[in-house]
Each structure stands twice: as C-alpha cells, then as structure tokens.
Image (cartoon, rainbow, N blue to C red; front, side, top):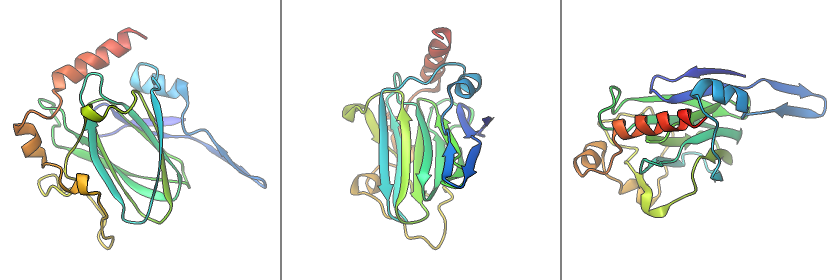
Length: 201
C-alpha cells in the first residue's frame, strides 16, 4: 500500500492494490503497517460508521472537541464521492485551508484525518457508500459542524450537482463565527495529543 501526505498537515491518502479476477475483486483498504508508517501510531478503533447517500448529498464539515477528538479513516466501497479535509485548528499554519480528493469503488483509495481536522464530502452518484473507522465513539455533546457552503472557505463542490444538506449542516456557523465563539480546537492541543499517541506506541 502506498500513502502520501495531503496539503493539510496530519491528513493522508492511502492507495491499496486491488486484485481482480474472474470471481470479482479483493482489496484491503486499511492496512496497519502502512498506517503506522505514515501516522506514527496505530489506529485506535472506537466505532465504525457506514452511510449511504444519494447523488448530491453533502455531509459536513464535521469535527469533535480535541482531545480526544475523533480521527477518521475513510473509504468508499460503492459509488464515488468528493472528500474534503479542512484545517480547523486555531493557530495552525494552514488554518482554514483544505484538500480534496475523489474516493470511489474503482481505486478504493482511503483518507485519514487526525483529531481536530474537519471532514466533509459530497456524493457524486446515487447509492454512494462511505465506510469509516473512528478512533473514538460518537459523543453528541462533543460533535460540531461548520457550514460546508461557507463562501470564505470556497470548497470545491462540483457544479451541476445540487447539494442536499441536513437542516443541522445548513444552520452550522461559518468558520469565522466558530472561531470567534471559541468552538474550534486549538492547534497546540491537537499537536500535544498527537505526540501523546505516538509516545504511547
């Protein structure tokens, strides 16, 4: 499995090798050795999530209070989606910047985003499935969102697809509003937490 760092620090893309034959296909979207080499610690598993989305469904930008936050390892076992990672960590040298990549059931690439980063995606076709491994269980009081249509972020949502948002995501604050209200994680807290995870390895 190959991996590369994304332009947002502490986010990575993983590219597994697929093995098709006359029976179908086999692929291992998550591989522990490659993950440890890239990130510097094992993936803790607190919960697995599975979502099915119609074309245009836009979910995010979601993040959790850090620490402990919620690291996410994401791949697309059916359909296709545009996946976006946003640096929401106040004090980060790349605060407010993002990276985007296509995840689909052709190449089975995966993306990992560390605790404190924001995640969003839009389904590019009907019945798109997103599967993700989370480092911590869902904690309702610690979960937050940023409006994915915030014009200041100017995220690369495709033209020609009408976004379908939940009421909660549509009503979420802009990045500036969340920063001013103290809702966002601090970069220093996130880095200290990453160091703690690596030292425990």
